[in-house]
Amino acid sequence: MSTPEERRKLIAELDHILPEDLKAIAAMPIMDPGRVYLPAGKISEAEYRARQARILAGEQP
Image: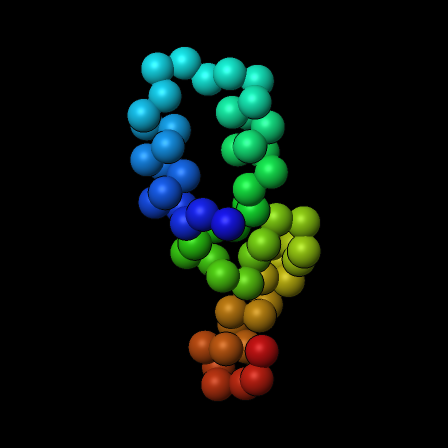
């Protein structure tokens, strides 16, 4: 598995994107690095916000 920086470098090096490239990119994990508790499709935005509010209030996530 590659890091986001490695993926960005690979994409930047491409002059054109082939179907195989798109498949490889699509197979990579989808995650907002600024929102570690919001992996795509795992929890909703409302659940994420509620979790963050609990954390900021000093409760257990």
